[in-house]
Amino acid sequence: MADLNVKINDLVLKNPVMTASGTFGYGIEFADLVPLDELGGIIVKGTTLHAREGNDYPRMAETASGMLNCVGLQNKGVDYFCDHIYPQIKDINTNMIVNVSGNDPESYAECAARIDALDSIPAIELNISCPNVKHGGMSFGVTCDGAASVVKAVRKAYHKTLIVKLSPNVTDITSIARTCEEEGADAVSLINTLMGMAVDIEKREPMLSIRTGGLSGPAVKPVALRMVYDVAHAVNIPVVGLGGISNTSDAIEFLMCGATAIEIGTSNFVDPTVTINVINGINEWLDSHGCKSINEIIGAIKD
Ligand SMILES: Cc1cc2nc3c(=O)[nH]c(=O)nc-3n(C[C@H](O)[C@H](O)[C@H](O)COP(=O)(O)O)c2cc1C
Image: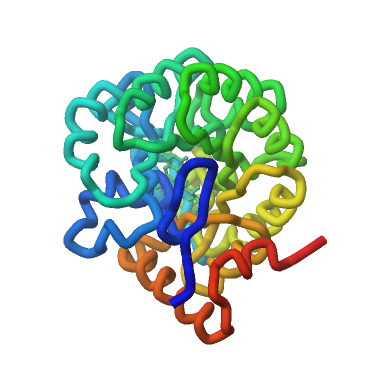
């Protein structure tokens, strides 16, 4: 068996496969189906300083090889997370990472500071890229100034591993990634969903309540892969790659394009055990290609 360990700053992952925020709950919902301690990490649902109702229904629509969603960061707020969810997840033997969102730099920082105090959460993923909320969310992730303002505020308040999740809805994702690195991000993850739309032609109405939503699933993979490749060649911090990964070869493509680790999102809805299959698949691939360590393939695609 090859060595699958990877490192993101101080964070050691037993393998590079994590679940993507918003697609795997808090992990515990899947405990009967998936051996959670075999995962490299679990990135839990988006958490905000105050509770959020999310958007009206309908907020999901199936598309060719993917889905659109406009859930809108529904969650019960960071106090609820600390008091009720954290006690249930703190002993899961994998990296439990909290995805943090906010309306302004201050609320991001306050939420991050609350999570900083939780011993069993070794990292946060800062979501500056949600396309489905009116205030905050993606607006910070689409300009260098916006990204800088949030990362700077959170970096002061948060002392463990800080991963910043980038939006693909930009012209040049590398400049945003570089800004995050300059402001102290320990890693970047990409991509969040791509803005899209679907129409119910009988009703002559958009399928989603807020008209647009975020596209995810296999349809976005080539776009995500290109962005991961570009960002991995533009920054010196680790890159976490995601977007449309549904099998072992998808995951290996991301690793070869420079991702140190990967996340799997929408594919969990199709097969909740996909992460375990991909971990086993990477192991078999490395063995059959004579590789002793995952590091032999990370970044194999050069300039
Ligand atoms: C239903 C749903 C909810 C999501 N919620 C969040 C969230 O709370 N925070 C976040 O950063 N990303 C969220 N995402 C985006 C995913 O984490 C991921 O970035 C995106 O779906 C692309 O990966 P995939 O194609 O593997 O799903 C959500 C995606 C879906 C489909």
